[in-house]
Amino acid sequence: MSDSVSISHATFGLMGPLAHTPTQSMAIHCVIFQIGERVILLDTGFGTREMLDPNELLGQDALFKLGIIVDMRLTAVHRLKAMGISPDQVTDVILTHLDNDHAGGLHDFPNATVHLANEELEAFDGLRPRGPYKPYQISHRTKFQTYEKSDEAWFGLEARSLKLPGELDAKLIPLPGHTVGHCGVAFRDGEKWCLHAGDAYFDTNINFLEPPPGLPLEVAFQTDALDRQSSIAKLKRLREEFGGQIDMFCTHDQSEYLSHTAGRGSPDPLAALG
Ligand SMILES: [Zn+2]
Image (cartoon, rainbow, N blue to C red; front, side, top):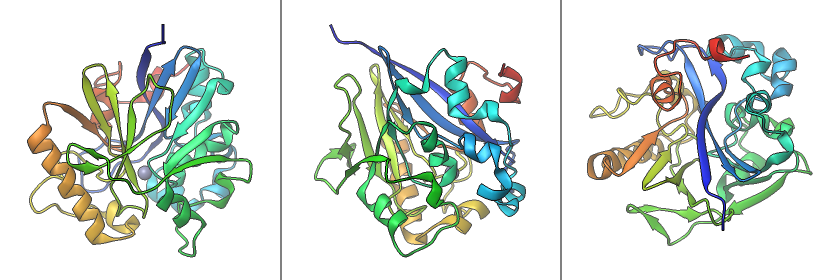
């Protein structure tokens, strides 16, 4: 009999409040899938190297402007250990994109296969430098599984089914604009679909106003304004047409993160750490 998938939500890092919103802090909302002994992560947040050497690897400017909390206990490795999971058990990592607050922790899981959109890896390797793309994040040892444009559809959006253990049904949903190959990740949780929208939006109460205002952080880091706005429009349609069937959340909305964890309403995830 095949193992069932156990799903839990975690923040692998914590940043300061999002300007001009009521946010108290910004989560780095990641997902942990456990299938028997095997563990699959959806984004890795910042890793141990960034926490050991933040001035050099993150930079004083980003530390200050983004309000990045430097605390080893927030890294994926440490959060997993607190759950009794060894880093060796992480066989696969699914990435929304390669910015360092989503992929910084890759170096802590050197044996994992990393799944992402083909366009994202090409952009990382390409000629358009981007502050949060940090070359040290990946090495010749990193095993990538990339996914090309496909004819598959998921609720009317392009989808790319991930090559993962059969028990986990998950797909990349291209939502470009924040980065060239930025994707949401749709996955089945029991009877329901979830959509981790990555950084396609930042605040669930502000980004879906009509017309959507551009928040300083998302405009500053966008690679293409029209693509970003088009991705938000796709998500808005999903919420309107299929809101009852899809649990949608993004990476940095703290209220969404808290609504998916046992610490509902807890103002400070650090308080729950050992
Ligand atoms: Zn981000």
